[in-house]
Length: 342
Image (tube, rainbow, N blue to C red; front, side, top):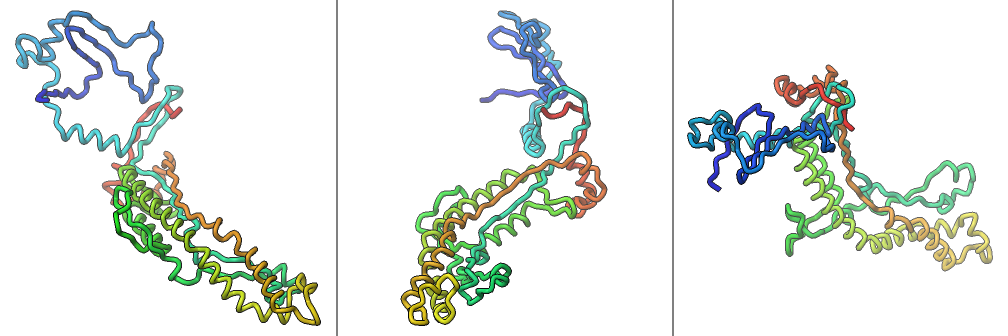
């Protein structure tokens, strides 16, 4: 707008002059005070239709202009504004109430717990009745678990999904191959790009990287949702084929030695093939029934702030020095006396 903005470091008084009205006030230090809400305890005065000559002169807006200026002796630089923004981004202020004074530490770091849950289809198993394998002994049935892995082929695990741009929107007519291997690569890349492992203490993230870190996680979450939709669209047919192969492998065994509960269906000393097939289908359908509904991969992340004791722990400091170097570690934390959080 072609206006000059002046800067005076250290001033703790607010002054506003507009349309011959003058307001002089004291900004509330919100870090330690909530601010008064009582009319009989004001923190400002207002002079209507007048501007004191001395105030005008000190601000450089009187007759003598800049020659009489006493405050705002230098122009506000863009670099100064940017430095304040970066500082607030790296160490956001917290709300405090003045109850008791304590030692407060501002940290440029977050502890973060990052967890990828239930995305490995290959690891999913179907629990089968041990009787299908000829184990009718109660001792064995209670101690032996018979399981089947229906997703042990890599072809089904990676599926084609719509490709997403950096803005989270689908790229027209483009797809990508996505599955557990892609998720694992993304997870490792996130760790490499943002996280620092401090042995015995946990994983840390720089506060300044938090926004980009979350954007990457949310982008991965969106792709994961598309993958789940693709899996559920194809899973029924895949499970049908897996059940067919399993049925073929078990058919002769259950005919020769039917599970105890099936023996009432024996005719003429043997279990008819059609009856064996029906009972086996029933058993497999029951075992496979929950496979679709239980597939719900998720990404979880939780932030935790470092305590005063942790920051001053010698082993923690040594762990940080391996990543940041001794000179930078001291700049990651600042301490001061202030009131505790509400």
